[in-house]
Figure (cartoon, rainbow, N blue to C red):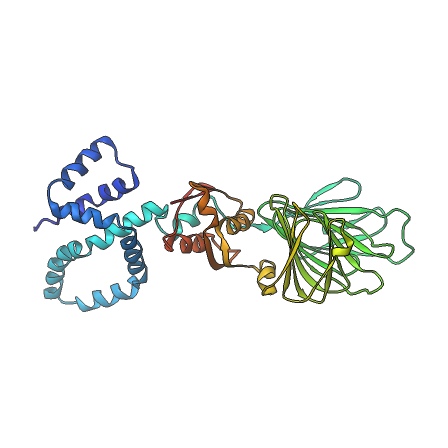
Length: 393
C-alpha cells in the first residue's frame, strides 16, 4: 500500500505548534519535520497566514457534505469503480491536506472546534426570570412554578399569567398609603408586567423597576435602573414619568426604550412613537422634546444631552427576541450579550474594545453565530473557556 504524505501524519503537530500546545517530545518531532525540507518550511509559513485560515474555513463550511457523499457513493456502485476509489482516496488525502490542516489550525486559534463546541459549553441563552418584592418585603421568585394570584395589602390583585405580571386595581376609594412594589430582573433574565393603569413594561437583564401598586395623585411615576421598554397607557391628566440616573422622562401616551445601566456612563432614551419630554438633572430650562425615531443620550458625568436621529425599532428589538447591532463598538456589544447570556469577557489589549462590528442574533439561540462573525472578520481572535470569552489581537 502506498504511503501517505508525511504532512498527514504531522497535521496535529502543526496545529499544536501554532497554538502553543506542543509537549517537549512533540516539539522535537515537529522540529525534525520542519527542518527536513524547504517545502515543509514554506508550507508551514503559509499555514500561519491569517488570510489563508479564513479562506480555507469559508471553503470548508461552503461544502454540502451530505449531498456530495450521496452522489459520490452512487457513482462508485461497481466493483471496478470501488477499486479506482481505493486508489483515488489515497491521493485525495494528500490533495486536500492543506485545506484540512488550515481548518484545523483556524479552529484551534479562534477557540472553536465546531458550532456544537460552543453549544455544549457553559454559555446558554437567558430565560424568563425575575423576583417580585412586595411592599411587605416578601420576595417571590417568578422563575419558578408557584402561586398564580397574589394580593397586596391595599387589595390590589396581582395575577401571574404566561410569565407576565398583571396588576389589577380593585374598585373603591384610593388607600391613604401608597404602596410600592419592586420587580428585579437578574443577569440572564427578562420579564414584563402590566401596571395598574394599563401601561406595559418590558424589563431587560440586570434591571430593576420600582412602581406604585396603585397610581394616585396628579402623576404616574416609576423608577428604573437598567433597561426597560414602555408602552404607556394614555392619560392626559396624569402624565407618566420615568425617573432614572438623575433625569426624568415625561410622557402622556407613547412607546419608548430607556437604557440606564449603573456601569455605563450614558443613559439612552429612544422614542418609537408619540412624544416625550426629557428633563436632564436639575436644569428644568434645558428640557428637550423627542420626536419618533430620535434618541437622547444623557451623559451622567456632566448632565449634558445629545439628540440624534436613529431607527428606533432597532433599540426595542430585544423585546421581540432579537439583538441588532449596527456599527457598534465590541465592548458595547459584549455588555449587552453578557447580561443576557450570563458570561464574562476580557481583552488582551484595551484597543480591542473600540473595534466596531455589526450583526443580528436570535437571543433565544446560541451566542455562537455572532462570535463567529466577529472572528471571521480577522480583526480579533476569539477563544472560549467555560463561561469566559477572551478577545486577543
